[in-house]
Length: 113
Image (cartoon, rainbow, N blue to C red; front, top):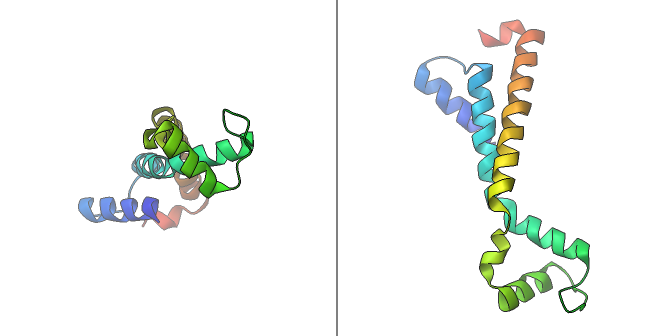
């Protein structure tokens, strides 16, 4: 929905539908926002996949991971890796949505009108 909203608003602002390049920028920006907001979930998922904390004590679920991380390492750890994650997903969003919109125009040329 964020990607679509950005496209709609950009289209309204300029008075016509966005180009594939503009849609790619919308995909990049919305992907970066989503990546930033979901980074703590990714950290929790990674910790669960590892199975146990630094002391070898198994995690008992997502809530346990969050409690242990915050109490033992601080809440900032939940944002570990946010910069490369946002960058990588933003680049991916640009490529994916740019390609999607380009091929959509190729397959359905009347959709631009």
